[in-house]
Amino acid sequence: MDISSRPAGLPTLITLAAFVVVVAGVRAAEAVVVPFLLSVFIAIISAPTLFWLEKNRVPRWLAMLTVLGAIITIAVLLSVLIGSSVRSFSQDLPHYQERLSGLLSQLSAWMSQHGRDLSMDTVTGYLNPGAAMQLVADILNGLGSVFGNMFLIILTVVFILFEASSMPRKLQAGLPNADQSLRVFSAIANNVNRYLAIKTLTSVFTGVAVASALALIGVDYPLLWGVIAFLFNYIPSIGSVIAAVPAILLALIQLGTGAALVSAVFYVVINVLISNVIEPKLMGRQVGLSTLVVFLSLVFWGWVFGPVGMFLSVPLTVTAKLALESGPRTRWIAVLLGNKVELQK
Image (cartoon, rainbow, N blue to C red):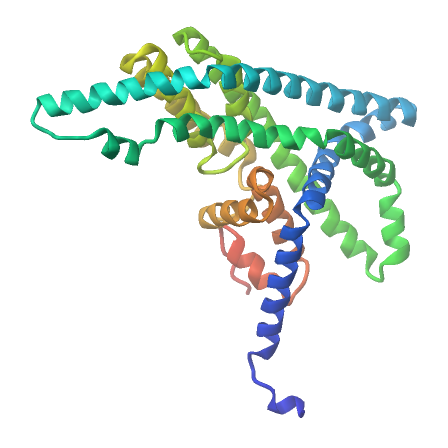
């Protein structure tokens, strides 16, 4: 077949088909890819500490043990806290579901007294008490499955950190344009590291503030809701909403409408302060993604990798954007993903 007779859009069609095949393969290999991705991002966060310790003449083995000990300590604390909270919450879940059903029955009776016929079937069609409270248990069980692979994740992190110091030399020896490749890898690591570090800091603040506020109100399991607020703060756009709904619903069931409203106000104030004031000042324009791209990346990576993909949606998209910027043929895609346009003169 003559090359000139090929349809103009054939290369693009082939590229899109290859992209679909790769995404389908990655999604099918989720059980293997997700622990590896977590290992890579944990290693990126841990590498600066390891390099700083080595720069200050700490022996490599001692620096590695220090970083590894910190990772294991944090993982164990989260696992124990989430595991114990899930068990206790699961035991009380039938009681909360019963209380919620009673509140809905009272709402139906009140509506009937005021001339509004609202059956329980209609109410539960819009708000299923069992599904509403079971949502929390499902989320936490999903997080528990991630911690179940913690040994494999930590082992992979160790090997990545051991290879980190020698990776620049390997790239220089193996790549034809090593300097440009090193600049790209360095930019990716620095941007992802900065984003994850700032996001972790603000997530800790969010978790502590939520747990303190709910404990002050008297809502059950304030530490659990604080951990959920900490974890779901990594999910852009809708993470804070998902974290707030079960805690506010529990406040309504346990303490009444007033406590639920106060809890909702606390959530709104905390998240607005962090999302609209603190994070923009700390991050500036480092992420460089448009709001639409952030939301679409949340949907896409969540579909590919599940809950972990939602947590890592922004780092993964930033990595893809920086990689696309390095090539002249793909730079236009990076421009579409960005939050500003720089006209070339």
